[in-house]
Amino acid sequence: MLFSGCNNTTVVAFCRFVLKPEGGVILHRCRHDETYEEALLALGINPDTVLVMKGRRSLPIDEKIEEEEVEILLTCSRG
Image (cartoon, rainbow, N blue to C red):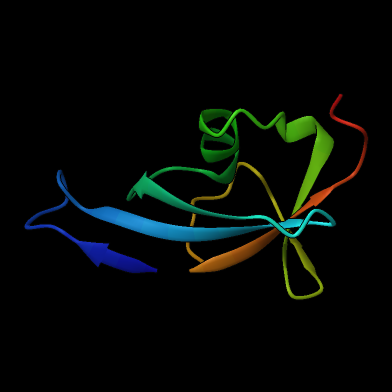
C-alpha cells in the first residue's frame, strides 16, 4: 500500500481497484483503517454484488485495505 502523510491521523493510502469484467480502473484514496466494504460504498458499488479478489484469493470485505491493487469481480447485473 502506498502511504503519504505525517502521522497516523493524516495517513492516506491509495489502492487500485480493477473492475472485472468491465476492465475499468479506479484509484481510490482511503484512510489507513478503511475496509474494502467502506471503500466500495464510497465508490457507489454495492458490496453484496461483488467479490474483492487478490490473485485467486477472495478477500473479506470487512478486512482493512492492505493491498495496492485488487480486482473487483462483478457477480451480478448492476442495472
